[in-house]
Image (tube, rainbow, N blue to C red):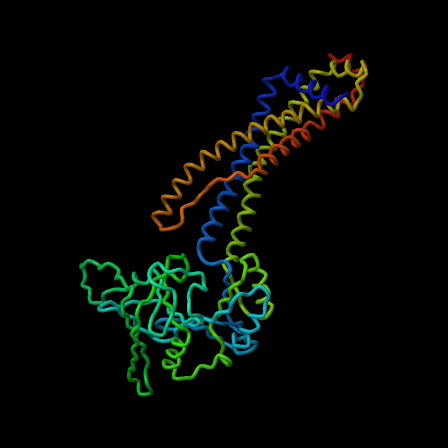
Length: 442
């Protein structure tokens, strides 16, 4: 039997039982529609989460820290913190020679050490007292970290400080009385702020050292720790730590608290990260979070797709039932077809084609229904999420439900395959009927 004749015969047979075929196809529409809308929702959520992560921080930066063999914890006071270890065995420090190892890794653009201010520090501006993380960095320009200035510059000097956009909100008037209205955050740009370092001598007497620094720049909001931090030159923070701890710092012996590795291309970030780990250091990057998010949403796609597939399985049972009833009703027709020369293969092809046709029609309807529902949900969800982002100061989403081009094609082919598979047993029964017995069937 020619292929076009087969298609014409299948279409004619399906059109003779419009109500039964339509009711059976509705089950497939529900199943395929559920698969499309649920998987599209998971993909849209993944895209939205990835966009949010890509908006916070430079993905070409890797934070590298010393590797300690024993347990380690964060400690510090005032303006910063330090990493301390409970044991000294197997310690991999970030010394100057270690920095050269990092620079030798292929794909590394720059290696910038960073130190925390490890001193009890009081930060003040006029009558206001503030607090912030204070970092010394081994670069003269914070643009090397991918940071931009909202006001002023990103360049550092010993007489200036560059601060994050949220730092001003951490200043308060300690003389404020109960019931008094809180003053607005001060405008610190181009203002002098005081750093007062505090320590105690051997007699327990308090000793202070003051630094007056001009705010040379306020960074643009980045959604990272830089929004709440103050940045100074590395040698200035080193001298502050030496004064506070009464000791000379030799980075060749003690190493740096942290090193920022900038990669030439963000596509190589994970590869460089793995090489840093192989050298024995601790390393993490924002891409680790992106990768974790992608893994989570990939699993979510499978789970939601499986939920929709359950409805498609129920529809498959309906197709099998419809085809089985069709064979009983058309037993004499099958016998007549065989009597006039139709082979078992011809009969099998006809009934498999009818089952596949029901799956195809239901899949086509399901794809359309799922896509339309997705677009409606997308409009509502994007408006709602945009309102939430505006209230919380986040990045508004561009999409909530996204249907990639491959999904409708895959679902349509899958529903057709499920339909054909559901009709396999009834089709085999029809193909193996004995013509004489079929003609005698009442």
